[in-house]
Image (cartoon, rainbow, N blue to C red; front, side, top):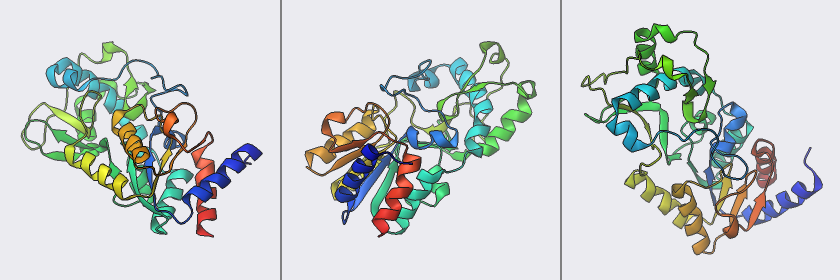
Length: 280
């Protein structure tokens, strides 16, 4: 059931999006109903401990051991996650050519699983790994099987799930961990094919996202606080072009001052309703 205030704002959303090709930008909030934790609370403040920084991962073998030990336990939740009604709704809007395209900050591939196509993965995908020595990529599940075989002592260890496949693991479990080697060059600097904190979005990806913003007639943000600059600058560019900027998000966003409309409600509930209205 949608209350009167949300219903009125939904009507404004219809009016803004009707007969326009909006680009959609999604964040962690769209995937929380699928069981994947997000990074921030409703005030945009990061939950828990700070994530591993890119330079730390590069420079410290112990940091890579810590990362992979925790990720081995967190991966099954990511692999088993399935799209929810919000992902399905966006896939339908794209299939019906009712949106111009889709950019996501998420690394869970749930948009692809829902049937969206040509999704711009601003921060990469956890379903791939990349070797920092030979630049070859490999399937994440294949690496998982290697890690499980080489670290049987972690079998059955219960660890609390954290964002992006991380877990909260007692450091005592990390010292013995055998980190995975690259299947191509046997190097020890395998990294998930995602953008770490402190790392830049790939230039080609950033340029493609900027072109989509330039070509779209508006931008709908779904489930993001926009605290990451890579996403915020797309919103700022849209506002500078004097095109409508809308957010469906609980709590504060970094772009609140730019928004033409904000709806604080469940995207899993709202987006299917939006699909039905725009198809009329």
